[in-house]
Length: 313
Image (cartoon, rainbow, N blue to C red; front, side, top):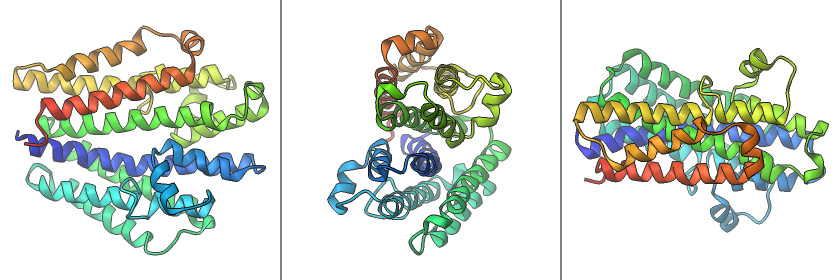
């Protein structure tokens, strides 16, 4: 497969995943803001910080309000990471690799773009926000369903899966980090009812609440939740699952192409970091520090994949 085509598939699905992840991040911020009304500006600032668009936001807005943050992250085209921007990028990439997609996948991507473009024609009122965020998640799920249900398990599928895994891992890590590093007021709140409410909100934001309760019943502690979202490879949005998915699909590419590259060793090392740790050692090391390291290494892996498979020609 040509590097440009591989890159188109990879970034198409990274962008689609990013649209859903941005919606999930907004949902987490919205829910947490409802539990802490004393300083809403700091809550919304933390959402912008987690989305890694602080400088762009500050260049355009003087204050962090629900309205400005929601608009900037959902529909502002000057923000290249807004949902509207990334679904347009996903559609552009889909058009570029159209011959490598099934009709069902292309239709789902195009429908996603049309539905969300229509939904974002005007500013989103806060009363409408849950419904709109649900629409973003639903449209993303329809594309994934078309991918899994109609695509050959070949290199096109592998690059799509790798893009999804890299982006999803970054998102789960950032949502965890915004919870424990930015949102928690001080160490004195650890283990408090406020702390527990915020952890439950994080579970809901990554659609993990039901799965976690199945495994842990009523034992909703910060350690158990962090362990589930970081180390449990059964949950599809955990760091361990995403690292495993990226590694497996890279291994399929290595087998098909008959060659390994530096990115394969980086993926193996990233996966090994979840296999070799337990949650106690991660808390001893520092949850924020562990997550920061993971984000850096995951981003480095993404860049190495681009180099090794010559996405730029």
